[in-house]
Amino acid sequence: MSVPPEQRPELPEYLTGEDLERLPEEIAAHIELWDGRVVWRRRGPAEHQAFMFNVTSALKQRARRATTEQPERCWRADLETNVFFGQTGKSDFMTPDFVVYRCLSTPYQDIRADDVVLVGEVLSPSNTQSDIEAKKARYASGGIPWYWEVTLAREASAIETVRAYVLETEPGRLPDGVRPLRRANYLVAGEWAPSDSAGIEISFPFAIDIPWSDLEF
Image (cartoon, rainbow, N blue to C red; front, side, top):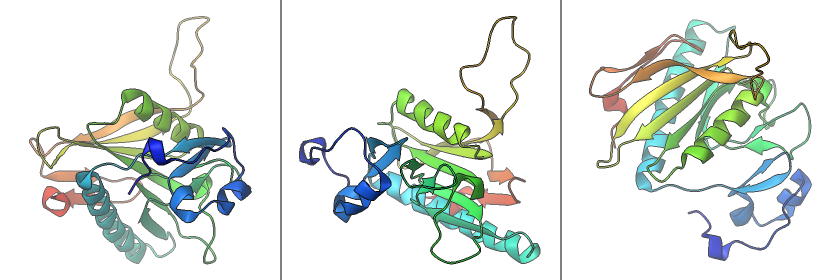
């Protein structure tokens, strides 16, 4: 359950990772730190949780299959797991709805953006475009190669579309004197909807084929 705005404790605008660890778990679990700035995470409706779980479960199965077929390349998929930016420290992180990353060498390590190959968010009708773009920009600046958006339908407990974005680190040709606002951006590399496809099918970061029946509410 998310913390309603009226029940959120009064906190400084900025915290360190150590400060966050000293907060009660029921509070800290709903906070991200963006370069140390406190950002409260919003918890969506039951559909959000259900589709987040279903997508993660499907990705876990495909990651396990890919690892079995190519043991030298080991993958894991999890849901609502902190992804820390930078090589050290815990004051800059986000918590995507689902994440795919390279298997870590020892247990209980923090997941760093360099280890991550895919992050994703389940977008409920209440998500604002500004929030969506802000998250996407931070994932891109962290160098995460793939970003997925799972958009839910407004009038039904169902997925409307799934979009896969690939990271572009070198901008295309621009008019003289024009510079991109950000050094890295995402480009749409795949789009699927139940109305026009049998499921999600893409070859990156490993072979993924998910029928819509695996994702039903």
